Every structure is written in structure tokens, then in C-alpha cells.
Image: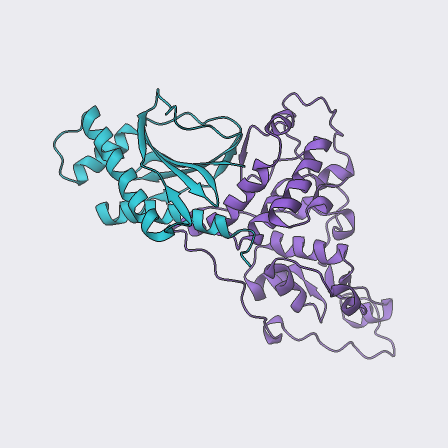
Length: 246
Length: 153
């Protein structure tokens, strides 16, 4: 069953003690800056102009570091917010209305993109990471997953296991791309990262040719996942293991 | 401190040089498609200009163009000859123009050696294929081409 109520996230009470020393791409901090109040991804897509997948990946990173938590509320508050029409609103006053997103102070825009000609506007880069997110970020009961051919990998595929939804390559590529500010520089940083992944491992994992916008690519090979995470760490100073772990 | 991705930012400018060439010669820009990473040397189109680079990054950039694209470009330039030699000359000129722009921009940060030109059946023996290629397809006036980036660790 799908839900009509999107998950909302807000900063944890003790985020200040955890935030010290962390480094994320500017897009992640831009999302974080908006989470003083509970926000759904659609609100931030509207406020920041980011792709939905980028916002959801930022939620994921921030959740992993316990900087944000899912917004929960009591039955009384839920009923009082008029989301259940048949529930009599008892004695509790309705919760204060959330200010519209446009009233939230917007942090400075992300760093300027490299001038790369028409690529940034013509390349149809899409972010569809919803299925790549862990169960706690979804309310849907089923996971839609397309597993690509392993191309001779000796490792058997964990067909349609819940963890497999986390092995999509695109969120990893998007995170690396964002580190270099997107555009062609971002694509080339992905290239440098993958130059440090053994080619024979890529071939064993079925990755002979990787379209950098292919949302269906899945990294089935455990050693390949480890190699990608290691290369991302050493070449782009970025942590992607959480996106590739089972 | 130089950001880790700075070499990529500089290398990305090659796309600008290619775009600039088409814009200045034809008045229109090529349209770029999503890039690919490939574990083997992609099949070259009819003619390819190679630009070897050294410096912060070592490797080469290839500009691979189809014969119809080159003929179309030659017509734009008012050239009457569209044969093999004319197409090879045009690829040399394009590679030279891009090299010139790149040298002007990069200075000593990225050194460009004289460009090499070959047909689809040949691959310059001076160049070493890396384990992974970055291929950026593009089209101009409906004809196919691609930019190939080949870096060594």
C-alpha cells in the first residue's frame, strides 16, 4: 500500500554534538539547513530546486549520522492536524501551522558549476533513488528492483533480497558527482574514482559499459562494492559505503 | 589547498573548447549526451584526433568524428573537396585548434603534446590505452561524434 502522507524529517535535538568535523557536499548542508522544522522531500525540492533523489540521498546521509530524525507525532496531534476527518478533535489545540517553505531562510546557493557548455542542460540526468533507500525511508511494502546481468560474476545474486535495493549505482554516482559541483567535472571525478577500481572486477561485476545516468545499474558483486567504496574514499574523499552495504 | 576535484574541473574545459570550435566555425553548438565509462577502447568513428596531456593528470583526449559530420563541416567551411585527405586535414585542424586553446588556458599546469590523427582502423602507437575510458557522445547537425578521455593512474 502506498501512502499519501510523505515522511518528514527534522534535526535531532543533539545534532550540534555530532555535526563537528563532518564534511558533506554543499547540497547536503543545504538540505540540513532547512530541517529546523519538519520537511518532506517535495518541500525541499520546491525550495532548493534540487532533484528529489538528491534530497532523499541527503536525508539518508543525515539520518546515518543521526543529524536528523523522522518526524513523529502523537495520535492527539495527528488527529488535531485534521488529517483524520472522522476523529473528533478533543481538548488539544491544533498544532501550530508549519510556515511555508518559502519563508524559511535559504542558505547561500551551492558553489558555482564549472562552465561546461550545454552538457548540464542537455544531459537528462535523473535521480530516482526512492527504491534505493532503506526500508525506514519508505512506507511502501514492496520494492521494485531490476537486477542486471552479472556478466559472469562468480558471486551468486541475492535475488530480490531487501538489501539489494541498496546496491544501485546511481546514488553513488550522484554523490561523487555532487562532490565536484556536478556538470562534466562531476562526471570526470566519477571517472577518476572508477579508474581506481580494478577493471577485471568491473567486468566480473558486469560493468563493461556504465552510463552515468543509468538508474537501473546494480552492483551485485561484493568485492566490487568494496572496491568502489575504497576508491571513492581515496579519490573523492567521500563515503559511499552506506549506499552499497547490504 | 587545491580541492581534490580541481583536475577534473580543468579537464572539463576541453568540452568548452570543442563547443567553442563548433560555435565559431558553424554558429551552432553540438548537443551532448550522457557520458559512459567503458572498460575497453570504444570503436573509433571514421577519424579521430588525439591530444596527449601530461601534468596533474596524464593521458589523452580523443575527438572522434564520423565522416558525414566532417563532410557537413567541410561544406559549411566552403571547401569543395570532401575526400579522405580533406577530412583528415580538417580533423588535424580541429585538434590543433583545441590544443592551442588548451595550451593558452592551462599554461604549465597541463602540458599538451602535438596532436595525433588517425582513421578508425588505426590507433596511434604512441598512446597507451588506460584500463577505463570516459566517452562523451555528442551530435552536431544530426551527425555523431564523441569526446574520449583516457587517463592513467
